[in-house]
Image (cartoon, rainbow, N blue to C red):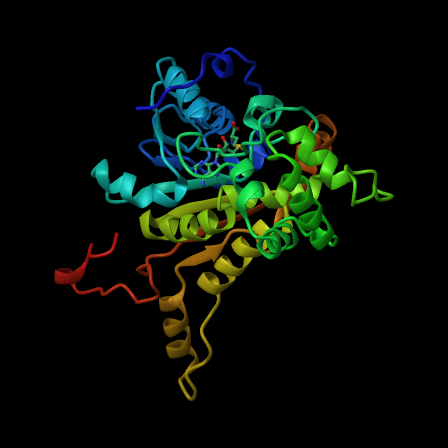
Length: 341
Ligand SMILES: C[S@@+](CC[C@H](N)C(=O)[O-])C[C@H]1O[C@@H](n2cnc3c(N)ncnc32)[C@H](O)[C@@H]1O
């Protein structure tokens, strides 16, 4: 399928799963349930959920070949677990290939894992010098080096501004263009130095390269497009009563989840002079989700102390209704049932 470089396999694989307690509480996995974990990582959620409910089918997906290799080894010891190399935007295709009609839980824990950051060879970290890669799926697509060495200045500035929220994006893009005219930018260390030459350390002390690296990573992996398509795929495969749980780490991600759930769980405008009970029936028909928590949950203090990554986490969860995906109401007539789920 794909070759995993041995130096990546032999490195430590620790990743503390974020908000595991809250994820397990929202998932409510029952015997016989089918769970899709679209961001398997190092299987922190898989271990927790399978320990609590061993009698479920746990489908882990990851687009990182190293995570999949790790997960496939783990599945030999953990009954119920199977791990597939796939982007979560492709979860519906995978579910159909596996000849499943629907699933009971979809969980997404966005962003990168600790081993991806810690491994200098993956090129995600400005703190460790390595090849400027940043692809989660190392088997395809353009690397960050391909992007910074070829993209037009204005487009680079837009990526860094839009996805990195870097106010000095134009200065960063200019500095990149000037530097690459001298020699191609091939390492994380050189890119970080270029950024630091035009962005100064703010009072909050965060490294000036943080935002540019985030912007490039989101672009290279099309993270926001993946999220939009992944949410729609989850809507298509979740059975009525199924749970969608999404853990985000920055406002760009959370905004997308919030807007998706707001649109799916909101009640349509009143149709006018309907009687209250008729109006309610109409409203219920259009909602494909019901929110489990109106405001996003945040990690508890003890977890934030133990795992700083949890500090920016937000968890949103919702229950799938029996309304067909796409907004059309399910037809209660027997000859039409099962058309969509
Ligand atoms: C934050 S980690 C998940 C950690 C996991 N919950 C655990 O406890 O070990 C995110 C993982 O999702 C993967 N990932 C991110 N976006 C993805 C996508 N669109 N499709 C599939 N996997 C993705 C990354 O490669 C990474 O391994």
